[in-house]
Amino acid sequence: MAEAAAAVAPAKLGLYSYWRSSCSHRVRIALNLKGLEYEYKAVNLLKGEHSDPEFMKVNPMKFVPALVDGDAVIGDSYAIALYLEDKYPEHPLLPQDLKMKALNLQIASIVCSGIQPLHNLTVLRFIEKKAGTGESIPWTQQQIDRGFTAAENLVKGCAGKYATGDEVRLADVFLAPQIYAAMTRFQINMLNYPTLARLHEEYMKHPAFQAALPDRQPDAPSST
Image (cartoon, rainbow, N blue to C red; front, side, top):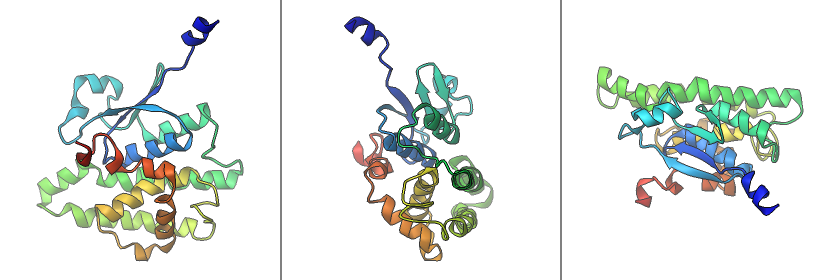
């Protein structure tokens, strides 16, 4: 019986991640919130490791994160979050209320399609090449400000301790890394977004969010 049990023991999840990637950051938060152990597989974007043929077999788009769960390989943070929600329903990230569920999905979508892709590393490098050194910063600030204005308006009337109430939900998983990057990398004035600024303070107190912070990852420069 012991041998049979060992044979069906689930393999540990594998997460291809880069310490400073906000997309990877949000998946680390989701995994932590659900209490799931995973093997961290570092992919150094600055060294071009995402273009390695072996990694391209994992994610042909050459993006991080990518999650491996047995024979399932998912290479998009939004898809990963929904996959985790379906397969590991403990500590749910989406509420049962349809209106609040839609709000969480909307906020997550704003971050992952309306803010972050407009200032990812590829875009910033292109802007710097075409427009000159330093020109990527005002572009990034404009995109973040637009998205944060929308997010602030969506949550200011319904936020509790967290974005959509007193429980951590999917909206928080996506907002937290974006706010962190805005403050630490792109000099966004959070006084313009008082609800988001307050949420950031709550995220920084939460163990699942703390453990997912970029500078606490094994491939962060301070860890080497």
